[in-house]
Every structure is written in structure tokens, then in C-alpha cells.
Image (cartoon, rainbow, N blue to C red; front, side, top):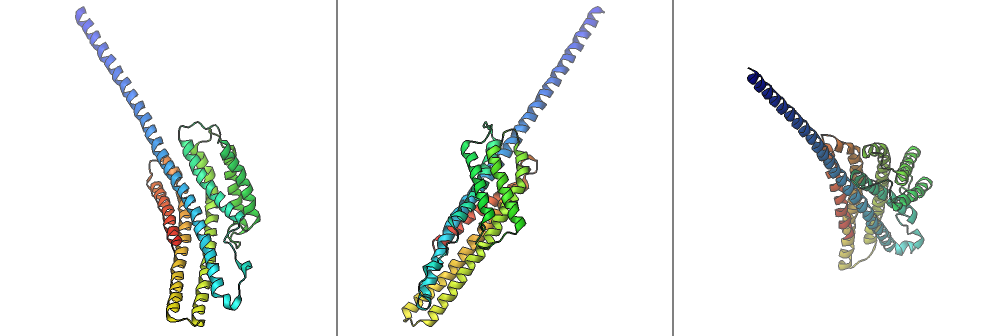
Length: 319
């Protein structure tokens, strides 16, 4: 009897121990799966933040390169206008104008660089790199951005015409100022999500100003080409060309029409790129959620529009 009781107790203890072991193993497995899920989630967010950073940097770089091409073409148009009007108006070098001054061109490029650098720093913060504060070069850039902000506020930086209303101008200067401050004073303890929330209104204001500026520049350049085409047409009609020279002049006019379309398409692509940047940043917090369909589409759109800018300015350059 005692032997049977002993065997029963041993069996009960054995089964109880096995149950505890199974429970412990299940708990360990659950914790492990949660940790792995957290790692996968973090890796997925990091991948998308990196993709956003690369696409934003490409958009900024290609927009700056497009400014180069657009400015050269703007100057070329003025040269051609002076050629066709020389017999009636003479030569007036003082009428030649650049599309940008060095100051306003620098301000545009600094704002684009700021957006690119901001996206790059988000990627750094998402990684495992130690970041007590940004490096000295980044902080200096933040200080320089403050000086650029003064240029935006005191001159017609965004296009030769005043395209921003007073409230829009205040919004963009405030946004650039806050972005510059972030470069100078950012600390690791503020998480990426908090930074994205804080900077979203600033990105919205900056991209809205850039888009409106590009619309104004597009009108200015379109008007230049229209006036040149009218002058060239009048020049052909009023001149006594021999047939070969007339064919060449008409060919030049036809070339100008195609070039004007390419220039217009370049500015349209630049604006779409900036708009795509705004839309992508507006959904950037989605990288931390289970539903990433929209942000993936926005990042792909941004990358595609950035690449399209290069396609158009390369085509314009060859004209």
C-alpha cells in the first residue's frame, strides 16, 4: 500500500514537473517570438526610413541639377532674343538677366540640402549608431540655415516675383528656422516618431513654398520662350532669306518649340518630385504600423519622380 502511494506521488511530481517545464518553455518561446517580432518590425521600419532618405536625397540632388540646366537655357533664350532683335533694337547687355542671383540660388539649394540632411539623420537615428548629438558639420549647417532664413525673409528668394503671401512667407521661414534648430540641438533621447511628428508641419511648409516657387519659375521661363518664338517668327517674316537660310531659320523656330516643351516638362517634374516628398513624409509614421501599403507606394512614387526629373533635364540639356 505504501509502495503504491509512493509510486503515485512520484508520478504526480513527475507530471507536475513536466507541466512546469512545458509552461516555462512556452513562456520562453513566447518572449522569444515577441523579441523577434520587435526586431523584424524595427528592421522593416529602418528599411523604409532608409528608402525614404535615399529617395529624398535623390530628389534634392536632381532638383539642384535641374536648376543648373534651367538657368543655362534661360540665358541661352535671352541670347537668341538679342540676335533676332539686333537689327531693330540693337544690342543691350544690361537687359540680360539670370534666372537666379547667387544669393537666391544658394537659399534654394540650402533648403533642398536641409530636407535631404533631415531624412539622412532620421535614418541614422533609426540605426544603432551612437548619437548623443549631431556632428559639428551638421550643427554648422544648422547655423548656416539660420542665415539663409534671413535671405528668404528679406528678399524675393522664391522666384523673381513675390509668389508667397505674407502668411506663407512666415510659415516657411518659421519652418526653416525650426529645422535649423533641430540640426544644432537634436539629442538622441527624442525618438524618431516624435521627430517626424514635430517636423511634419515644417516639411509641409517648406515643400509648399518650393512647389509654389517652381510654378512661378515655370511661368517666367514659359513666357521667355513664348516671346522668343514670336520674335523669331517675326524675324523670319521680315527678313529676305534665300531658301536654304529660310529653311534653317524655320528649323530653329521648330527647335525652340520643342525645347520650350522640354523646359516646361522639367519644371513640372521638379514640382511633382517636391509634392511626392511632402506626401511621403506625411505617411512616414506608417513605417511603425502593420499597414505599410500606403507608405511603400509613397516612397516608390518619390523615388520615381526624383528619377524622372533627371530624365527631363538630361533631355533639355541635349536640345
